[in-house]
Length: 194
Image (cartoon, rainbow, N blue to C red; front, top):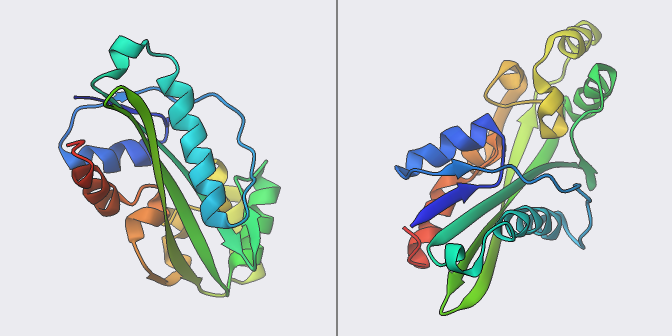
């Protein structure tokens, strides 16, 4: 079996490595459009679009033993989807909104593979609640100036400098990092993909 991760996220690459499989990295280039009736629908649709984009790069013969894994993560605060920040000022605005609140992190995962000559695209979504401490104006200003959250949904990484502002989580920690690896493992096992 050949595995391809349709993401350039180093965090997803590290987490997928915990499955003990070898995989290639082929980031999807398509535009990310948020559309869906629910946040779970949205992330599953985005993940599926990434996986399908990469699967389409392969011939029918090459697809026979191929599994493409797509993933996408969004932050939802008070019903609003918060994507990645445009710049440092925007990142500071995002953290100002999240601080002192509880928000949800959704990661959608798509598995694209062939089964009996037919293309299968299975998706699932995981949701984790993240509880944040309140932050002072000085802390917010420092965060906006120095954080590494520019490439992350919600403008923060739970595994990096924002960790000191997270008072707790309800759900899967790895989901917040960007890939619910335990659920992915069991979903792949169930489908005979490992």
